[in-house]
Length: 277
Ligand SMILES: [Zn+2]
Image 1 (cartoon, rainbow, N blue to C red):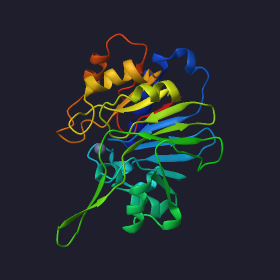
Image 2 (cartoon, helix red, strand yellow):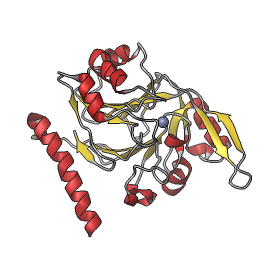
Image 3 (tube, rainbow, N blue to C red):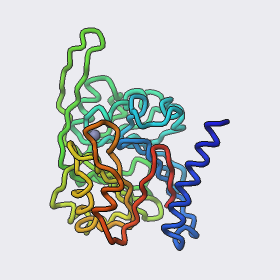
């Protein structure tokens, strides 16, 4: 009970932030739901109730609230998307795929390795490439794979000998999810700044970006602010991939400070918070 009430309060706080920020659009009560679960882990619910999970890393994620360490708390899952092979993005892919039977989509080389390792059943792995569009939930929801400036390897540690082995993980990517109502979310995966963010902004016109700000492996707050303001120009932004590990030092406050005066509405939410768009 206590847990439920706390969730409700957190949820209310998230909704309030949103309502204050965008009073006019709030009244339309559109129903794309975005839930951030820490690091890059994200659960999306489409207008027709389909559930997309991106980069599941929950059970060993220090920022994921305890109730989400049980993967069943995600409910039904229709599609799993993976941006690249690092453990803080793939940690729960194998278990979640097994529990839900959902197809796993991502960079061709990454999915090939996951199939070879037995994480994903061959018939459930969907390999696709940057620039490719797929519709695993039917024609009304389109997922486009786009570039990310990062790396991708899959490192497996033998539980007995502790020896680690590293496999190729294809090329890293981000995803643009276009929902039934035309709303476009750009989950950037892990990335540094790159010039084609301007192309992505102009061509795909994302409404919402989920943008890494932690630094060290990805953009820091200043880089992320430049990408947001000068290249992507979304309506909304949710900072992600910070605070999980000590090296990911960037904070939402620094990101907002670097953005300065802007029309972009930033939601510095906490893991497990939900927003609707
Ligand atoms: Zn990462």
